[in-house]
Amino acid sequence: MKKFIIPLLLMLSGSAFSQVSVGTTEQNNNKWTFGGGIGVGFGSQSSFYLQASPRVGYRLTDGLEGGVIGSISWQTSDYYRSTMFGVGPFLNYYIARTFYLSANYQHYFINYKDKYYDYKMNEQEDALYLGGGYMQRIGNNSFMQIGVMYNVLWKENSSIFSSGLVPNIGFVVGL
Image 1 (tube, rainbow, N blue to C red):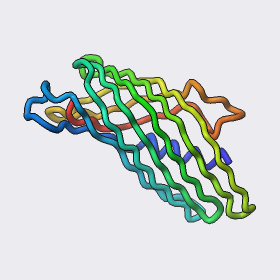
Image 2 (cartoon, one colour):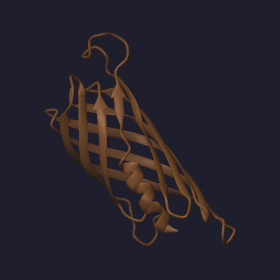
Image 3 (cartoon, rainbow, N blue to C red):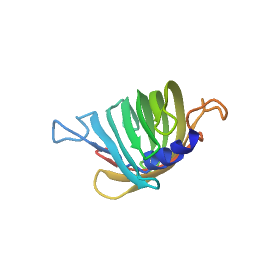
């Protein structure tokens, strides 16, 4: 069961995130950010993976952003099918536009069906990701982020996820 989560986490962490400002032309006057990510993957046993994670944020200060993030992923193969929804708040702290610290709470709803054994499972799980990383400017208000997060609520023998460690790569526009 946990074996199918490893590719899910790798593809989820590889999704590109972007944020854009809307409203006035002055970046400092507009505090709302919108963005998200999308991921697609293919694997062995005719497996297919699709993921989207929209988010909306608000710049509380120049270096602090808070908001809500959601996630949905769908994975299927010859042997199983799974759907996972997640939603929760996030908080990012930017240090001189070079480094960032991040906290992200997600409550997941997981639906899993084993096609071979005709077994179904519905689970819920909480995750609290803490981490950070490095930001590299790639444009005027654009940054590439490389970091790592760790789910501090992860338990090896009871979690649906195969690991608590989640590397991530993303893009941010409009900071």
